[in-house]
Image (tube, rainbow, N blue to C red; front, side, top):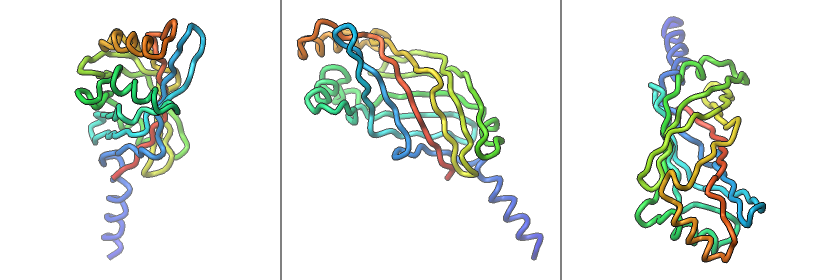
Length: 191
């Protein structure tokens, strides 16, 4: 009987290394900074994220663009309709390949800096970036990934230039920057 318990315990402890990891939306945050009128910057975020890292390290994040939150309902509506066109393009996506063993082998509380290529898709257009991330093993069933440096997206890379211009005109602003720094805090749980 003790051998059975030893095998069961070993199986339970090994589970997270081979399990799928799912994003904890409530504990995660994806924010971006917009700059208007030359020097006025504001922080906004998306409220609904879906993510998964499978056992082979394929990481996928889906951002519901309809969940954009700037603190001003009219601005949120303009972003949804004029910029993102959520009726046609409801989601943005981020894809990456992690060496999951590097993270799952960490002791709870240990951290690891990662530099890895990611691909971002907005409005059907994809663009690659190099992301600087910090992974922290929180406990046996959770890890956190945060951006060490903001990822700077450019609106024209995703065909958003016309949408930014429509926003500028609607808000009667002199300028809106086409460069948008993005930061993230993501917590994944093994299931």
